[in-house]
Amino acid sequence: MTATVFKNARMVLPGEVVHGSLQVDGGRIASLDSGGTAALQGIDLGGDYLLPGLVEIHTDNFERHLMPRPKVQWAEMPALLAHDAEIAAAGITTVLDALGVGEADVDSLRGSAWNRVLDTIDTCTKRNLLRADHHLHVRCELPAPNTIDLFEPFRGHPRLSLISLMDHTPGQRQWENIEQARTYYTGKKGWSAEKFERQVAHAATLQAQYAEPHRAYFVDYCRTHGISLASHDDTTVAHVEQAHAEGAAMSEFPTTLAAAQAAHERGLLTVMGGPNVVRGGSHSGNVAAADLARRGLLDILSSDYVPGSLLSAVMRLVQDDILPLPQAVATVTRNPAKAAGMTDRGALAPGLRADLVQVHMAELPDGGRQAVVRGVWREGQRVL
Image 1 (cartoon, rainbow, N blue to C red):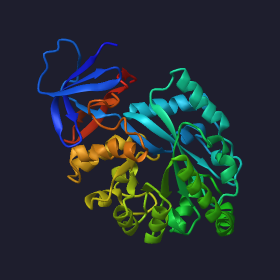
Image 2: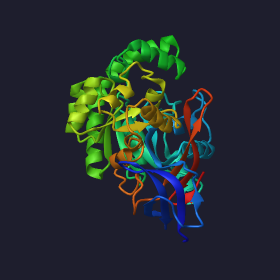
Image 3: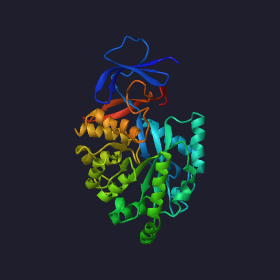
Image 4: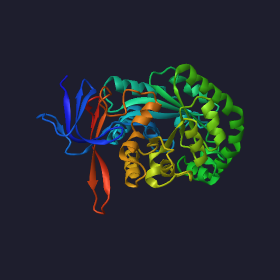
């Protein structure tokens, strides 16, 4: 395989930005050099930024393509290919597709089996139809009676990289504010006001019966199979202490400053949403990601429900003087890769995978700047 040189690039390294060139050989980064290069051949980036490929550990985007409207299911392969194209266009080269298990409503994605979806991911990967490297993040709804049964297709699956423990019982964690929960379930899920009231009344019963035994089951599964574990929507210090005792590596979307501080003190990586940064706050009325970043409490950004929010959030943190560019980029590259146990990617360094993103900063009429993805390479092969 012929080596490829990327020249005239502003390379975003772990601790600095360096103008120079990067050489790729055999799908890996072979070398980095500052300044100009004598190479006549190569890809001239014209002074654009060169970033490591973004690593996304929690996106609901695939589920959105599989069910674009309530109770409207889309065919698996077109949904996957559309999701994959959107992911790659956002500069994401490694994605943990977040698929939820556990739901009383059998017409919902999370209340049905995932076998065909997993087969589709495997088929498309084998046929080299995907731009990004796809892995699995299983989101387990602990109070749902069918969570363990619906997890069965994921048991022992080689793509399974992360399990997160969720409890969306209204009145606590993400939905501590009942009215915020009402807005979400009646709007996004299409529930009637009557159905919402029925579900709230029933939720406490389900939580009392299933949440703790299901939690113990998945904690044990992660320990015995070497799978990364994440807590979800931690609100109190007690929530974080429980997650830490169970061996969780990260706290996804803590809803309060106190929970984020407790996670930091115990060595849990804090994951917040890119949309939270871009919008200036949480859509659920919880703690703002930018406030955590100012306090040194933000480790990882997730695009959550908007793939393009990853890069936008990074640039927002830089432009608002909250984080320097290398540190902001680490929240979407090195840090999530480390959390998922992927030590072969996430930085521009010799020996690592040549997952690369060319980013151009476009000047806007109002004086602002917009990050534009101009090229994406996975293991040295251009995919966008």
